[in-house]
Image (cartoon, rainbow, N blue to C red):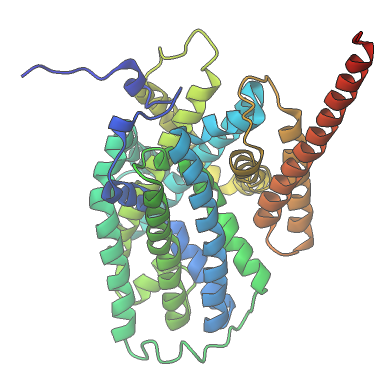
Length: 439
C-alpha cells in the first residue's frame, strides 16, 4: 500500500483557503468536535455562580437566555463558515480587509493563549489538592498539563475528533453521575425549587457571566463548522453541542451549587466524597476545550503570516507547539494572579467581531478581503467596543450582546448610507456625461 503524504494545504489545516468538499465531515464528527469545546470546567463554575446567586427558576431562565444568544452566534457564524469553507480569521478578512483581520487574529491568538495558560495554572492546583503525594510543583504540573492538551491540537481536526470521541462522553457521564449522587444524598434536590440565595446577584449579572464567559468560544466555532457537509448540520451540531456543553454543564453546576451550598464544583463534589469523579471530569472537560483553543490560535497565526514569505512553509503542528509553549511559560509564571485585566480587555474587544462577520455575510455580502483595511468595519468595531465597555462599567444589560448587536447594526448602517451615497454620485455623473454627449 502506498503512503499518501498530506498536501501542503493539509499540513497547515486549510488555513489559507476553504476546506474542500471531499474533506468535509459527517454530522456525528461535527457534533463530537463542536461539543468538545463547550464541555468545559468553566461552565460548572458559571453554573455554580448563577445557582447560588439566583432563585432556581431565575437561574434556569438566565441559562436559557444566555445560551440562546450563544447558540445564535454559533449557528450564524457557522453557516457563513459552511458556505465559504473558511476559518474564523479568514471570515474576518472578508469584513475587515487584510491588515484589519491581522488585529483580530492577534486578539484571537492572545485570548486562546491566555485561556490555555489560565486553565493550566488552575488544573495544576487541582492536581496538587487532589493528590497529596503528587511530586511536581504547580508550575511544572501546569507545563505537563498543557503539553498533554497539545497532543490532540497538534494533529489538527483529526486530533480534536479523537480526543472528543473519548472526552465528550466521559465528561458527560462523570459530570452527571456527580449530579445523580447529589440527588441521592441526604436532602437531595428537595430544597431546589424553594431555594433563596443568601447573597443574591442581579439577573443581568448572571446572564452577562453566561454570555461573556463563552462569547470567545462561540466566536471561533467557524474553525470547526467549516468542515460541515450541509447547512442543516451546522444547525443540529451547534444546538446539540451547546445544549450539552454550555447549558447542560451549567445546569449541573446550578443543581450542585444549590444542593450543597457550594458554588465551586470541585469543592461541592469534595463535600460529597466524590473528589476523584470531579478530578477526572475536569481532566476531560479541560482537554477537549484547551486543544480547541490551541488549534484556533494556530489558524489565527497562519492568517497573520499569510501575506509573508512564510505562507505555507510553517506547518500547523509547529505553530501549535509554539503557542502551547508560550501558554506553558505564562502558566508556570503564575498568570492566575494577573489575569483579570487581560480578560476584561478581551471581553470588550472580541464580541463586536462576530456581529460584524454576521452583518458582512448575511446583509452587506460584498466581501472586502482585497482591501488593506476596511474602515467601515473598523469604525463599527470601535463603536461596538465602546458601547460594550460602557455597558460593562454601568452594569447595564449584557455587555457582550451590546457589543455584538451594536457593531453589526453599525456596520450595516454605514454600508447602507455609503452605498446610497455612491449610487447618487454615480447617477449624478451619468447625468453630467449625458449632457456632454452630442446628438
